[in-house]
Length: 190
Image (cartoon, rainbow, N blue to C red; front, side, top):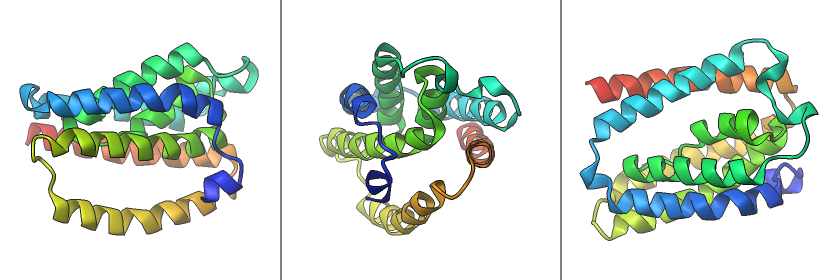
């Protein structure tokens, strides 16, 4: 709700990205048993590390949107579908991949990318859950613990989003991506 009240969701971009993300997540969840999870975790982790480094490095081209026109509908649709599919495979909403993709490839500004990412991620999580329900692959205890711990964090994060300057926000997200990416690579290798 904080992102909605603060106007940090680009609803047009959400409409382009959410449906293909949800379709990709449902498809990925349905065929997830056929894809080696460790290989996907390593690939996603390596991508997060690359995006993290890209966001931390001080350069003007981190955001395509700031001076290069409106966000790209086509790129939002393709990015949404691919990230949704990957997320469906491994049971993650992959907002950590979607956010830098929104910034780098789609062309969203940093603050609206954060809010839009959260809104799309919510829809993607619901679609992935539905896809995994058919195979009985839902750990309800883990889902409950994850939700109980992530909801307060996301509320706090949403309130802090508007208080950080854009460069600080991008560096903070970059640092989180580095840690998350390294953890996923480690999990995939272990």
